[in-house]
Image 1 (cartoon, rainbow, N blue to C red):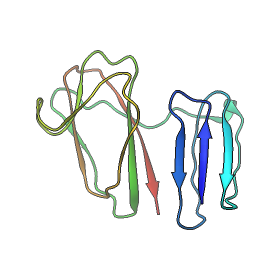
Image 2 (tube, helix red, strand yellow):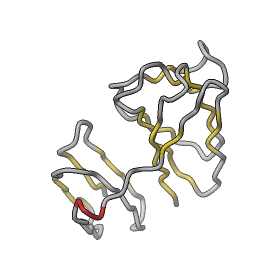
Image 3 (cartoon, rainbow, N blue to C red):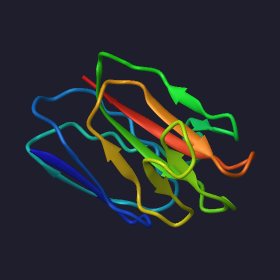
Image 4 (cartoon, rainbow, N blue to C red):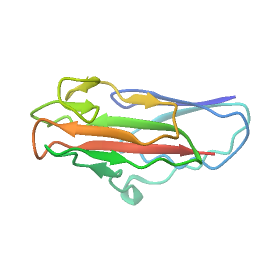
Length: 129
């Protein structure tokens, strides 16, 4: 089964192999289609908090490994001025830019990020088993 959440810039499709809690905080109006009998709880917008963010900076940082993680979803801030590299070195790996759609990584390993602007941000969400 799957839960489809739309009404945002990029619709979010979540596919689960077994019912499990999946907290998702999205601002604004959304449409939820529930396939597979998953319980869905909608929280009013006033209760939504800012998603976790990382500022990789020019020196870089790493999102730690998590053996319970099924997937990691990354979204660069739409106001970023530079690129954020999915790598520990600029010009290597995958560049992430403002306006790019969310990137889903199916990994429990550590993930290196490096910014080309000291204040650029990356928002993240972990899907935990």
